[in-house]
Amino acid sequence: MAERGQLLELDQTHSAFPALSYFPEASPEQSWVASVGTVLDGAAVLISVSRSTVDEFPADDEKGPMLVLAYGIPAVSRIGRAASLPIERSVLLADLMPRFDEPAPAISIRRHE
Image 1: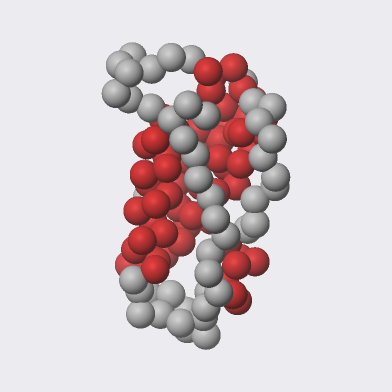
Image 2: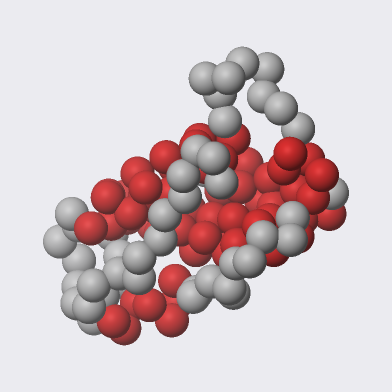
């Protein structure tokens, strides 16, 4: 799973060296923040349309998106905190699983942030 490995690398590099978060992209149309957000959004959409319930073990095609969220959400949170952004510790996916019937916590990021 390339996305999980890339999220782990991003977490390791940008948490250890927060200044990397501020390096300009090669092109104004590119943004690692937008790319990570897209991967996390895509994983969340795939999980939201799955037919599995909390009581079932996830199907093979649902494991990848779950791992992306399980590693990606805390990684982005750690990177933001390392860069001194006022970000609270993220809720772990494992803690959210028993509450899948409840609405998800609201999250957002804007380009200027």
